[in-house]
Image (cartoon, rainbow, N blue to C red):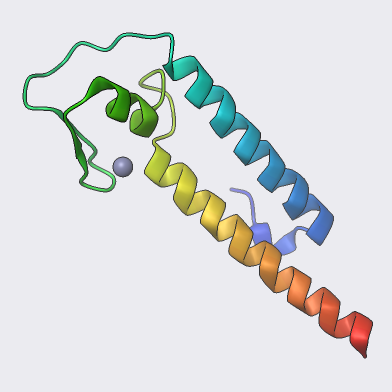
Length: 97
Ligand SMILES: [Zn+2]
């Protein structure tokens, strides 16, 4: 498991760019696939949201069963952004001293 606390500001920044890029690629792929409708909607067992429209389900779950759901991507991206901001604050404090 990647320990984000051991990464430098530049490494975190690059990792965040890769996460955002992978998310954008996954969302582009979603536009070309069809998913059988389960009748009562798609339920995410990670966040509990229910999607009644295919487009909404694609946006959340990704193009394949192996895709990382949007709620997980957003949680991970949010974590990266918070750690990036913490490092930026520390970097700023050191540069002001
Ligand atoms: Zn979810």
